[in-house]
Length: 157
Image 1 (cartoon, rainbow, N blue to C red):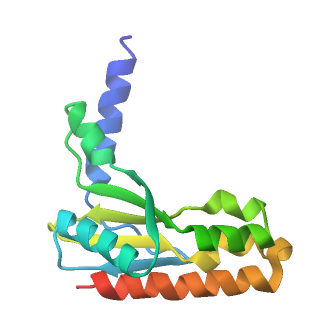
Image 2 (cartoon, rainbow, N blue to C red):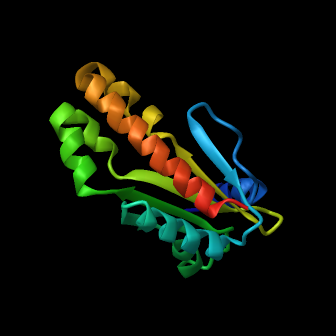
């Protein structure tokens, strides 16, 4: 047990050093910087998802879970979105591709109090399955890309 306490302390110091920082740009990711606070961006993201005909299927809130453990971290929320129409259409092209549903949106609180929305573009998410799903899956991913861009515009600064 003695080694666990220093290990935990090292982890928490390391985590605190990185918490609240914007994520580095990554290929295939969309990054929507906003002037909004964390909770309003989460709410606006959920509203935009529904307005675009998608459904919030999952949410993970590491901030709330950490708070229950007595740990304070900046706001983090993963929001998994999809709908049954897309599910049926994806399954018609590739059973394997459905492991990617729901597609996640990630809202983070920045050190300056603003919040950022991140997501992997649907084209990126479904890229590993294109050989199997062919042109129909490419078309579905492109359609979802457009929907996610509309969500981005709706929640932007």
